[in-house]
Amino acid sequence: MMDDFEKQIKEALAKQDPSPFFEARVLGAVKRQARERRASLRMWWASAVVAMLLVVTGSAWQQHQKAVREEAAGKEAKARLELALKITSVKLQRISRKVEGI
Amino acid sequence: MKFAIPVLLAVLPLAAQDIKMPVSLDKLSAKASEVVDVSLDGALLQLASRFLSENDPDEAHVKRLVRGLKGVYVKSFEFEDRDQYKESDVEDLRTQLKAPGWSRIISAHSKRNGDNSDIYLKTDAGQISGLAIIVTEPKELTIISIIGDIHPEDIRDLGGHLGIPKIEINPNKFDKKDKDKKEDNQ
View 1 (cartoon, each protein chain N blue to C red):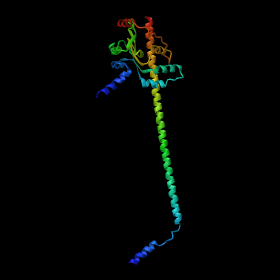
View 2: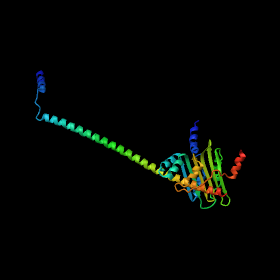
View 3: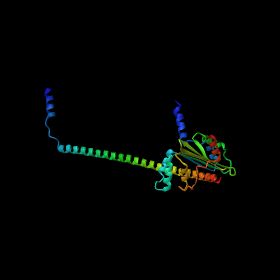
View 4: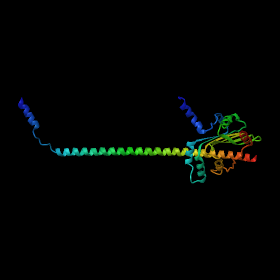
């Protein structure tokens, strides 16, 4: 019983030569993993750059839209101001004429 | 104390406009054939000012003028027929303009045409801080309120700019009634 067990242990721990192309397979696996890591890193950077571009473009678009809205509001306010000044001026001119005519 | 903040918030816009346009005027819009309603507070005036060019002499002049203003409010109604509004529609406004600080500097009335024009100035510590104009004609009603640092010479200088006709106004021309009233008060 004990002999069988020792035999099994010996067989299990016995030095074995690697299978053919073992080193090549290990090196290939290492290279493949390194390649996959690099590809993953490149993908991460690409995603980060795209996200950053989206944020920058979105922000620039928002700024542009805000500027467009402000310009429209400013031009509208300017036109209303000019109208108000024109009405005021015409009324004052009429009053001035009346007063000078008295 | 609980009501102090809401009351203060309700009063602040009125203080900014200085005189409150009577609500009854809004009803006139339905009867009028033409309505002009311009309401520019300080922020809108500053925004408008940004679009007035410094390089254009006319616009630069108006830009300088606007710098001292806190509000410009104009309501003008033109009617197809006579007597579409009542004097009572502007009575509330005239009452507001009797408040301390305001004084009527010009009052022109024409019985022949039925036109009445009044110019009021507001002064604070000797400085002009507001201008109000009420013009009532049989087929037209115009109310103008300009709040801020505005002087008679500023009003005069409006003429000839931005297509506005050149006007001449003499601020020393008070009507006799006002002059007598002032003398009576002294």
